[in-house]
Image (cartoon, rainbow, N blue to C red; front, side):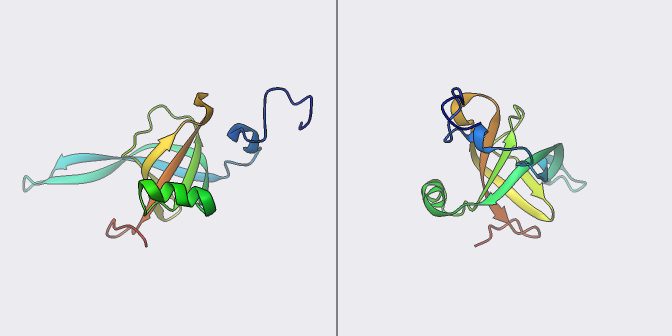
Length: 130
């Protein structure tokens, strides 16, 4: 309900804008681990951590400009419900695409949502898309 009786929720509140069905994408969260192969070399592998519902969207306009100041390869924003086990070096798998988390924040410090700013990478090489 929007208006005088809407309580303390405002339109600028991110949880207000997240309507039913807002988290319509399914993403897998993976975490990098290092193992030693048969030759004794250290190999980085990715282990599944959790599946979550998310909102995956391209950055544009002012938000893209601000994110580019931290890392000019950030191109996607992934919003999930708060997940305390999430780490900055984790990645999301969305369909056949890979998004490495560059940084994330907790809007309004309410532990309801996490907004993750990500770079999309080539699946075969791990190089950022341009």
